Length: 165
Image (cartoon, rainbow, N blue to C red; front, side, top):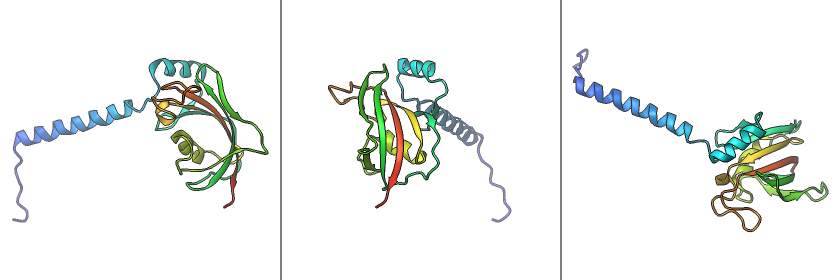
């Protein structure tokens, strides 16, 4: 009947209240679970890179040089220079020849997930120091013998250009 009030039993109201509290707890727990660095790596990063910003997926970065160009989009081919180090500073790999940069397409599973996430946030000409949790890089398997299991990685990435198709 229109205009008629429906009485809700008190038990049902209490149940809704506790379900709401539970949803808030799950949401706050999910927020806390976003930290992807192990405690000892997190401590090292906070001490040595206190100015690093953090993405919502757990990648930390420092803009070393501002870019002036466009940002690459999914599917576009980019050219980058990079240096890869372990958290202890040991250099693992690098591309440092501007005449032969590393090229790949964004979001085509050609690089680690962290690169597919961070490159679209950069502008051409920009250089970033990027701290990558293992799960967004080579995971628990690593890439022996160079990259150990569950390694946090540090990249310096210089976005040189977006290549024309």
